[in-house]
Amino acid sequence: MIALHRFLFREAPDPLPFLPLFAPHGKRDVDDAVLRRDVVASTVATSFMRRVVETPDDPCRAALYDAIVVVLAHFAFDPAYGDAHTETSIDAGDFFGDPKIPPCAESRAAFRRHLPELLAAWRARVTRKGTSTFFGVVLRHLGAEGGEALVLERGGMDGEERKDLLLRLKDEEEIGQGARLALVDGLLDPSLEVREAAFRGLEKQGAPVEGLDPSARDAEIAAASAALREWARKTNP
Image 1: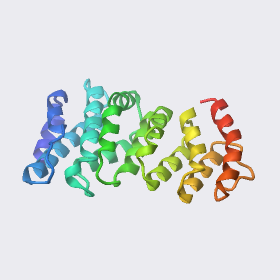
Image 2: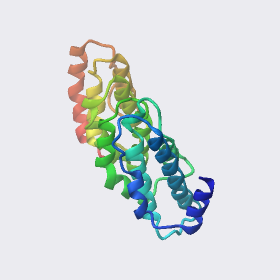
Image 3: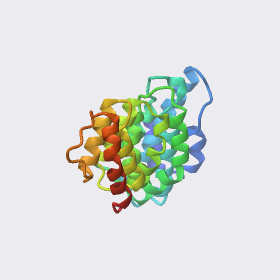
Image 4: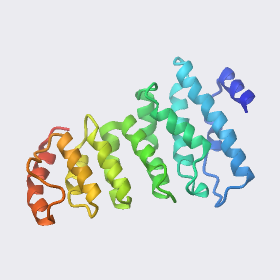
């Protein structure tokens, strides 16, 4: 595999013919063929990542980013692996979260193009492991646009996932109206931890939360929420 990686990096082929390797395998269990596929896919994908980092003038740069996002979509939530992670998904998650590899026009375009695919894979997950990394890379590369897409998925999240998303929104420099309203709605979440995350998010984003206690009775929070929703709608994106 090392020799294959070096060969692919040196020859710098068009990524397009390799996309079938990154497609879903359709199996319910991990067998030798699935394991071999993961090893080969990891080898190919990391050669693409290396090209992005070491050859910034690569004429296939946009297609390389596109292929790596496809990798993330089909390997991050492989149902056959259950709670385990594929090697390829670890590589892709590390790549898109690496502070030394900042978001760029090509990464944003690739995430935007494949966001429906990414969200579909996330919805079909059989484990919550990997969700936090997924939220992080979508927000990192799509910013407010990614946040608006993620908050629409709250109905399919458990409490830990809702808390994780709201805490991530808290630290975003810019969030959209939908994300601000999601923070407000989070104050009435069944989980106190989620309510506290929502409160911290609203406070960090500059909402008028003075005197509000996230552990207060629902009626008190609901009464305060009207002003917060007005803030959420009027705040510039």
